[in-house]
Length: 454
Image (cartoon, rainbow, N blue to C red; front, top):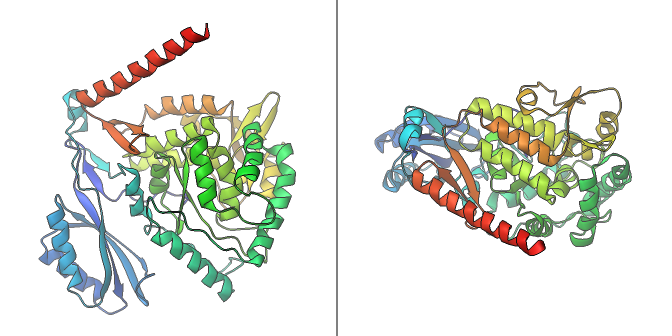
């Protein structure tokens, strides 16, 4: 689940050496006058330089605040020294760090000259690095605005808090948390599911319509109960390698898009308030499971989503904004051509009764998907879209996106290694040559298969 506007870059790499220069410390403090000053003095005593501070109401020290502090740190010893200094403060709770202190080989040749002096935002290198996003959310799932239908319902708020706590505790490799949904929650799901299921044949794209019955057969999709993301994640992994991961609330666009590079989708598990089942001001499990999930089982759409994610790794703030906008007009509100008709494939449409019908009328403007133009299109987030972009196909959209990605300012290329579930930075001759050999082997296999078919 992604916030619509990009956030600051945070941790950075030095672009010439590709060595990580910053790491993030997390700690919670009790609400007390001078608490932050005391912590900052402790970090100064550890001889570390602070480059960024974020704070939000604490979920582990009540009443209190959670702090995320970026510090310059080149070794684990430096980080450990800073942690020990923080732990000495009595009002501090739950101290830890989130970082990948390993250094990457330096760039070579002309690429090194092009990268000199540039700052590259930190990005995850292996799938377990996504654990760093677990608590760095912009809004928690139980934090409701005053106009939210459930804002004045203490039972609903406590329920959401219990669900997001499970997401907070989840780490890579663990079984995904199972939620025992209440009868009231199931009733809300039933109303949404039944109404949307009736609309899909008329409005959804053929890829979506192909997958949805498979979800009903394999993942217990149906009107009577809310599917479990563990079952769905296993199904997606068998189809395209995509998996789900629970999330507490809204992630920054950078963090959300970075996870797509690993074929991971962050999904909420709480559901909208029962008083208004046909409206939600933020993504919930209806949006995620009915809108997003089906197409992550389609190989061509999965490739498009991962391409956006790979382009986001180490991208500038300006390029993150463009990629987030492209995601908005594709994965969230995308339309596609099918023969002589236009169908919906965006999750924001396929989980919204009103906008799904509206988008396919003559009222909104429809433009062909061109990433360079789509990336700078402004859009509203609280009303129906005045403009939609129509893709000829997922393959065509992916091809156009790859061409667009070559115009980005990132001074290196990356590839995803599905065997190790890690990202490789192609910034040296050895790495490029190894990549070339792997491609050569695949081409030989392809040639051999074609010969056998003749």
